[in-house]
Length: 572
Image (tube, rainbow, N blue to C red; front, side, top):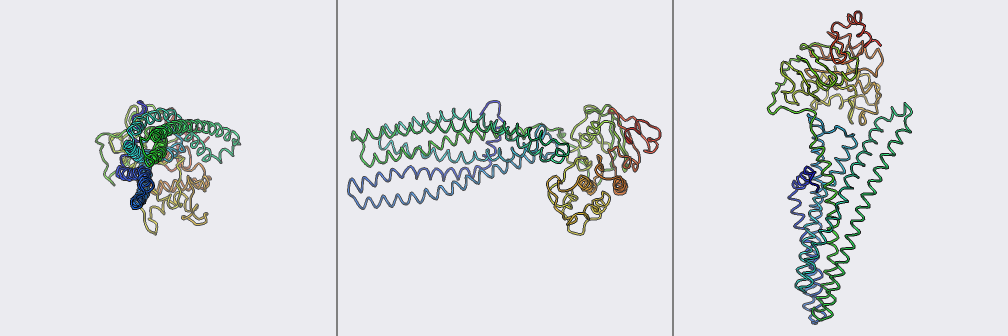
């Protein structure tokens, strides 16, 4: 493990340590299996000495019965050891995946920064699987060590020279194997990074397939993926070569060591220092040692890959959040949020000294001349970013002093490009609500009518029970927008911030949606961040955000008549 990467080691051992019961059980049973395997050549040698050399048929039968019992024991030990190891590996991987998903979905955010969704998926699957496999590697390590120890003790009883040869030579082989795993660890980390990048690019291209086809960029997209895929392939081949080289060299060293043990045993037998049965036992033990020593080569490779994957998992788990929660945050009482929203001299991103006061129950339209201003405002209100200067307050309390979950429950920011989920149309609309049996709550029905989702449902083969594919790709752009808006309205948050909810629908539908939002949100604080005249027309007040500051405020119709900058922003 590299000294610069302690979090990776911590993640690895925490994941494996959480499965200590299965690891211990698997290790004990594995040690029993390897002990039985090591005793087999010893028992065969004893049977030969009694039955062949001494002519003792009873002794021969006795040792054969003992040998059969050992075979039964080692067979069951192997079966249940493997079961415990697999359970530990898959459970550790499951817990890592759960931790990764929890970190990605954590209120403070930040884990997804600089990473494509496909890359995060690769980390949560392949890397988690590799770290989980370390549990099995540890079980095999304990079992192989037991086999080596028992084999060495048995050889010591046959010959002091043979036993010492094994006891002294085995640590040397293990040390060499550890050194040989270092290049594999480095190349395995690079391999996983390139594979994750390729997965991320592929997912990104598939998500934007319609757009790519629409602008005729298929060839450029294929060329981009080909470059990334070739880099991934090259990294995988380098890692495979490193693994093959490591296995090859370790196999040669192991074979040479076993040959040396067999040679020494043969010379001892030739001099008469050991008997025929002992010679058979020595050769059998030498052949047996190929297994445990070969397993250590596999163990080193698994540990190297596990450490590399653990480092990548640690980077996600330890990623700094976009925002931080106060040590002792204030809490909001459910149902007691009035909805007064105040921005005091806020500076954040492109926003400069922004002042805005929104009364409880007011519907305010915010038109922008630069999309970056809208994005910065949405991040602030959803508390995905905190002001560099100034403060954002809800009912007189700054958002930074409130619990993140309370802020997100009180202020719902419905992004323009919000994704839908796999499930039905109704599942998406009621995603923020507790499960309820039919009939639908009145609020859900009203939200669907206000957003035009009821029309969408009538046009689908199974109505609201029509299945929706990942990210809503089975629906048109306008249908997706209406279902996403219905989901936001159905949540009935005290403060709702909606960003351009009707850009993919026709003018008639847009006007109907504007009226529906006003009706459904009556008496609740609502911000419409949009340049749509139809939506701005239903607001109590409209403001113009230009160069990070509010430059105009008032009734929409009056602003259209009196302010050329406002008129340019919303009518052109």
